[in-house]
Length: 123
Image 1 (cartoon, rainbow, N blue to C red):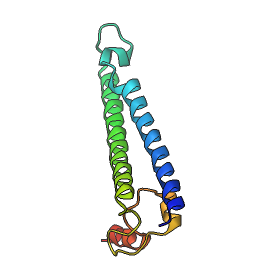
Image 2 (cartoon, rainbow, N blue to C red):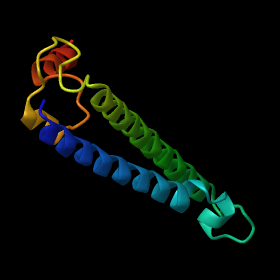
Image 3 (cartoon, helix red, strand yellow):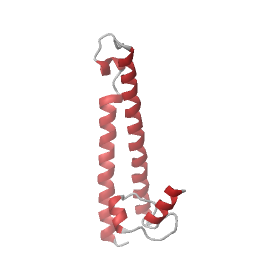
Image 4 (cartoon, rainbow, N blue to C red):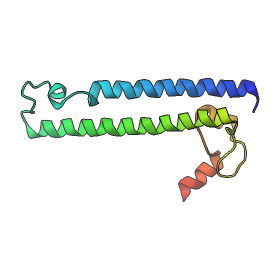
């Protein structure tokens, strides 16, 4: 992989990382860092109806799932940056062939070429 292409991918990965960090921070600030009292807007700290509590709990669980997914993607982006730094970025971890540029443009942290990815999804 040529230097110019590596630098372009590094910038793409850094932009992806910034976006993920921003999204995680947003989710934490707007949902996870609030107590149930703050989230419900109720002064007593308890919802008036059990269904309201269920909705509050569902929303909190949903947000936790979103944060977990974003953190997994952040890990993949950081690993891709590490591989790029070590000069191990580009080959498929399944077959060893080069991952196509189109795939890396779409998913810059991809570890597998499209064929290997499809094989993994089928099995």
